[in-house]
Length: 203
Ligand SMILES: CC(C)(COP(=O)(O)OP(=O)(O)OC[C@H]1O[C@@H](n2cnc3c(N)ncnc32)[C@H](O)[C@@H]1OP(=O)(O)O)[C@@H](O)C(=O)NCCC(=O)NCCS
Image (cartoon, rainbow, N blue to C red; front, side, top):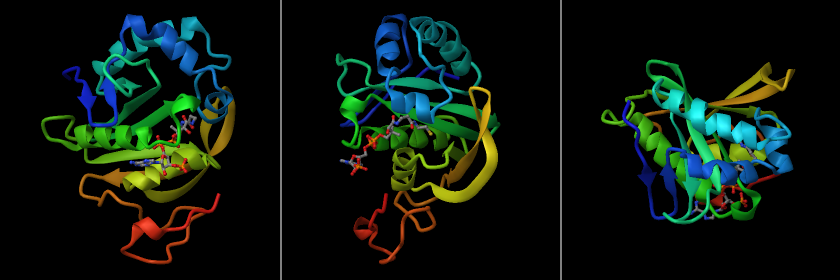
């Protein structure tokens, strides 16, 4: 597949390059990233180097693209986002952000961009995007829910984190699904169908 950059008013997404290695390494140091992802912990410079030199390029050649997240063209790397191909028309999305830039909607914007690209016939032509997270990862679930992913349940011992199986929340987004929050996510009660902006959030 072609290597592509994506951007919107809020975010710039670029395929990782060698000059990103140090910033990727710095961005992956936060405890929440070790807690909620399957990245190595502690995350070393050699992990970032392997990712940029090998994992990312082979992903791009295997319908599993990854991008760095920046706020501006010349700003620092503040996050990562990517898709892992599940089959010819489905992939799983994953993402992380540096703590300093959280709670501003950057990742919601990035996930929307990546999903648009994945579903486009001149992008990846996907029909389904999957999201999964360790049970309790409310920050990640809030992003997926905001984008329109539908909660699909709990997979018992569904994910492996550094050799330990943990329960996983599962969700999915289809190409024609509306891009707004829908009922069914744990911790949310839908009290006003049709007015997603008034949905209360309980954490
Ligand atoms: C998951 C993670 C990327 C979410 O980051 P985030 O900053 O909460 O996500 P966003 O950038 O979309 O920001 C959403 C917040 O911005 C606010 N926001 C502001 N403007 C917004 C806009 N235009 N659109 C959407 N949200 C907006 C939202 O209200 C929300 O606020 P909240 O913190 O009260 O929920 C981050 O917590 C993280 O990296 N965690 C560790 C790694 C991880 O868990 N990865 C996922 C593994 S499955």
